[in-house]
Amino acid sequence: MRRSLLARFLLARLGWAIPVILAILIVNFLIIHIVPGDPIQALIGDFPAPPGYADQIRHEFGLDQPVLTQLGLYLLNLAKGQLGFSFANRQPVLGLILQRAQFTLILMLPALALAASLGIVMALAAAPRAGSLYDSGLTALSLVGFSLPIFWLGQLLVIMFAIKLHLLPAQGMFSLRTRLTGWPYVLDVLWHLILPMFAVTIYYVAIVARVARASVLDALSQDFVLTAKAKGLSRRRVLWRHVLPNALIPVVTVIGYNFGYSLTGAILVETVFAWPGLGNLFITSIGNRDYPVLQGIFLLTAIAVVIANVATDLVYASLDPRVRSTGLRHA
Image (cartoon, rainbow, N blue to C red; front, side, top):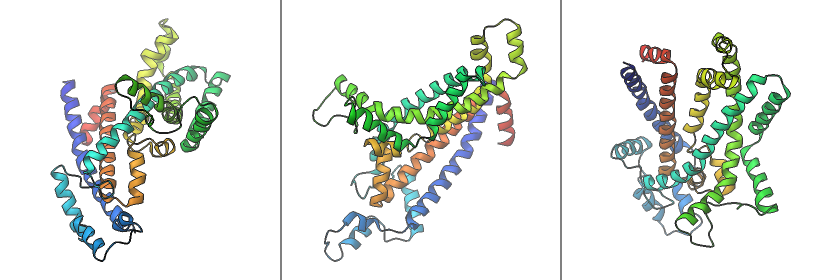
């Protein structure tokens, strides 16, 4: 029965997800093409091209067609699994985005998982001591982490640990002076990962900790906590077995939101640390007016956000049966 309800709940959410993705795709396509600028001029640059060369390239990429015609062709190619051809990189968009996406995921997923874990632990440590010096210290620490601009924090980390102390590499994903393979290559990537991952973790752990602390405080005031304490359960058991499951829904919302935007959420971090992910590709594509790449990144981001929201709803439904019944009634 429970599996049947979850399956119906999932189908209802997916039914809403498809038109949402399509609407986002169309809006992004129109915005990109309406914004002033010529991708062919950005591609050619100051090179003295022969007469008619720009028109030839524009016709080759279909940019001489009306915007609505381009939209129809794009949707038709998208239905065939084709995201187009990159103007600047001279390669299929799908392969380019998938290659860069894996680098972004290597950076973002460990950082967000660590931030979620640390944020929950900090909340469980601070909320039972609300008003104490310990709680105030953790709250102030999380506030500082949330207030620091992530690009500025990244630059401070580079100056301190790379330039001053010479402990960690400043930029890049791997060493360029030597060609490494196997485990030495993996260790080299992890070595370059430390600073950008730390910058992302500091920012997101503050968000999770603040939301989790408020949710845990609310759960601690409920009657079931008093009942559990009256039965003689230890504080640790009350927190982990009774308080945490009932305080997770707002926390799951924040975690799902962060994971949904993880593909492009590292734009500033990737720029500071020259990490070759989607964020770096996004900035480069804006400068080059590379329409197909921008559309592909927007599409991938929309899908990631929708999938994260659907996954978050499923976690809701697993944690609270009332969400399943309410979601099915409104679907």
